[in-house]
Length: 417
Image 1 (cartoon, rainbow, N blue to C red):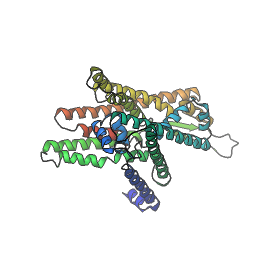
Image 2 (cartoon, rainbow, N blue to C red):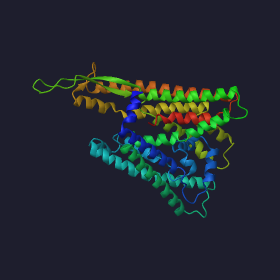
Image 3 (cartoon, rainbow, N blue to C red):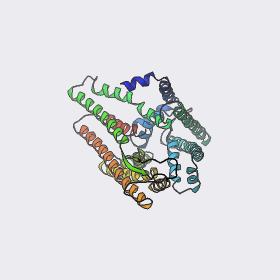
Image 4 (cartoon, one colour):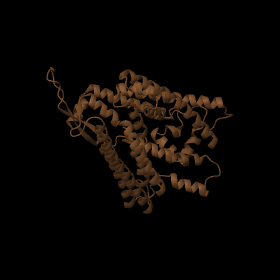
């Protein structure tokens, strides 16, 4: 309580909180500004009919901006994709980027500038392809469309993404936390009041409400709170590697540190593996929705069973992809070879481990162990989500869309921070 009071008395912190809330308000208001020339009602109905898959996840990240097909329909997604691509290219794939990464602050500025240019290019391509795809799947209201028309709409949506990049930068400079993460969180949590309102109307204030519906509402809210608590604990858990520094030579006028530690997060890959896994699984089912005459066929049902992560076979593939991406991205984030070299250059060592290749192998083995622990916890928790989800269906509670909405949003909300 004392910490909260001290925060409220700090004018600088209150200004930062106020600026962040103002940025959230601007972001939410922008989700209602439709791009020109289109009929938003048709697109909104299309998203209501396809509430799951990659489109549903993308819409959740943008705070319904994609469903409204607003000027910020792409959200901050192109920048996140560009950041991941640039980060992967620094792994000795492009020597120039590796050189920039080793140049310190100057190189970091060059990489950030390249990432933004790449994000704008990806946003333009994504907006153009998405608009063409929606026009092919349904009538979005464009009269006598030409390629120039679609290009114009793509430029408008790209400008919206550029505005979000500017807004996220302002949050980073004048607000609280990392601007990109805060924009993602704002998009996810902006739909929560509506979700809670819908749950109350369905299970509490309805005319047919009874003890069973009250219990269902309480169970769903408890699960949601547990999800937030569990993911928060996971994100803050780490394994500390003890580090000792050799003393400076006797002729030196000062001595170095005696000991320290390097914290390795249990979930060092964050939410990236989950995003990649869900995205890859959702791409085939999303494409099938645009193929006429495929719905209802044996091939369609087989692909749906395989690539829908709420089905048994799809869930197994989903868990496997999470493990693969988690290990891959963990070693991208934490480079054991580079860490071992840095320790050796700083005259530091891990007690009981030789510097050099032995230190690299030790860090690699430890990273594999803690990543395995984090993956098992995450996938086990997701499995519990699905078990409860199916049990609610079995007992006849109509929480299909509501619970899936809760599970999906809570799975990404804290991890995006």
